[in-house]
Image (cartoon, rainbow, N blue to C red):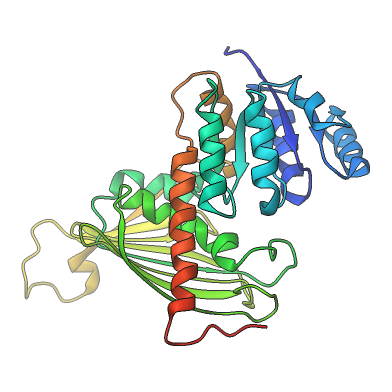
Length: 325
């Protein structure tokens, strides 16, 4: 069995608590401790998962090889630089930072050490995305819809960095990192001081086009992705982790067939059931051990941030004014 990686969690709010819970149960990790500016919160979660609550971040960093950082986005740079500068591998929750300058500063610091720097784009580990992997072949059009009811957590940033960035990262991955050649978007602020609903249309070098909508003021939760390509059409429900691939049946000829079922073959998409966060953390710790692992590295995290910032800028350039406070 591979050596267990001594790990910690920095920031144990709603999301950081789940990181701690999963690390505590992982065979490949040894959860050494937690740190949070709210010491009482850290102590409570530490007792819950059976580890130590550290009173100072440097003390935690001196005791671990890797950390998950789940603090508010506005603190990513400060905390990230402290962790990376101590030579500790980092899984930074998305988005990597609030600006590209902050991301570049952390990337430069990470390059000075033999460490792993990953970003928590958890949807890459979604069951539907994993199941679709072998079917995806040069997408031409990508449509993403991500809706969620309003909740105060996450409203320190616009919905683009809060929710849409998941689909922007997936889209970047699907188009193999092709640069965006045109970004157009419109949006509105409803319940916060930032954009709460945004629709974006992105054209990429090579011809692929993506239309992505994100809202955090919806009445229901929706996470859907549709991918169109020459070989067929994939419909993915990221909320349930299910999907299907529809393609023309072998031997079909135009004008033949009396029903859609005679023309189109529907292939259910399936992948082993697994918790996406558990898979993400397992990949991260494997990478820290030097093993091949499908992490979202910080360069990809920066690319997702860059596209998200382009979308936000496009909203403010839109001929339809962004409504807001």
